[in-house]
Length: 127
Image (cartoon, rainbow, N blue to C red; front, side):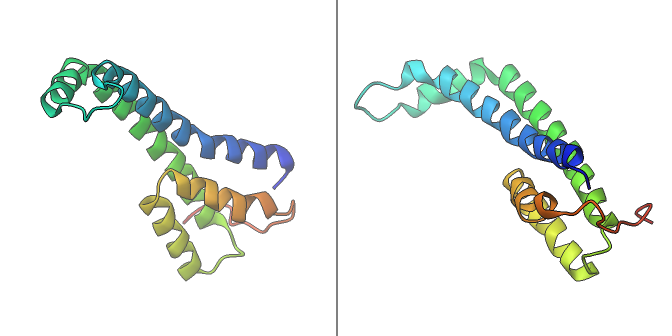
């Protein structure tokens, strides 16, 4: 795999993290008015603010989930095409990616894709 493809996979690994991060920041910004400096936040106020901003939170969550699913599928196809990994290692990586999504993408990119050579043998398809 060439350096451009490695960089593209790295950017893909960052997209779900960025999407979920934006969702979290939006949620924290909507909650900021009810957090007094040194007091415990009121549960009813938190529920009220969440209900008032539910549509946008749902939209951000759905968009983040769709981005995560697409990138996960791209990474699973890449894992399935690799000839250098045996089937049990492939299954392990797919489970790790799915279990600790989106951080698993960064781990896989850092441990495997970043070190792949240009001559890494791959299958032409996943069948």
